[in-house]
Image (cartoon, rainbow, N blue to C red; front, side):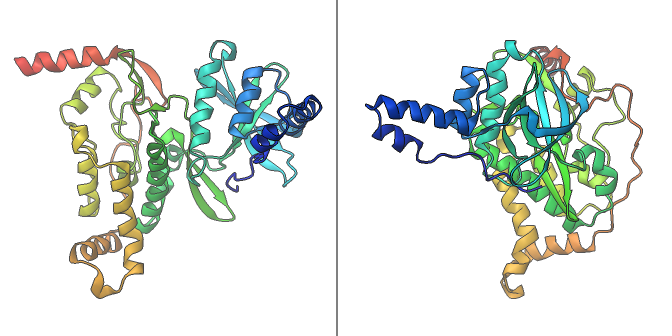
Length: 363
């Protein structure tokens, strides 16, 4: 899978329109050009979105071997072969359920996704198509599933491999934050694994809940996945809190300081970083940029500097990773029947959660 840098981009479009603004004949020509270049979706709002974001309208006839993969609360996912001029490509077709009721939400997801495509760590998104009745977004297919499905294999990796994977994840997350966006559904089910010519690659996906940093939530509803995720999953090979029901009680426990168990022989510098990320005060947690810089130092700095120029702390950290044994653990691998790792609405609100915590603090 190659990263998408070949989206339709008529860079002379504004210049052309400016030159022919008063010439009706040429205006008609430009309209024909747009229809040819982008196709017609049958929906004016989608057509305008495609033009604005320089995306592609892809005829459904260009897809072969369309097969159903799975269905969630909000969307249905299909896999297909896209017969592209640059070569056939495996893609995902994502169909939003109740599309007509949620057009703005549908386009917001892809607006935020498109804004992050400069990163090679965000899954490529090409544009839209339409089956006889349903609009679909077209994005790359990751052939090794998601991070959660790969945890048993990942734990057997050495620390150098784990750090490279973590670097890709945090690099993609940092791209999102640099766009002043919050992913809002960042868990191991939305981190994809792909193998291309024996080269492993990780991508972030699913921007459905993504929103600008300054947006304020109007509701107290809690939606998503309760437990923590990578980096702690990389040490254990199992999702955090998989032996407990993911309910109000586990949420209260986390708010009171409960954290995933730290696996024996985890490098101390890695433990220290996890503890910083787990700080109950969000203002005391490192930013994605800070974490990215730490990971970059661990991976790359020893190769870029002479040994005598590397400070003692970094040398110690690097040696911890080198000497750490291949991972293994004795944690529970059979999940609790009420341990959920797919995003969902919970039967309690943040207001209720805070009320209980305040009540306990006052006692």
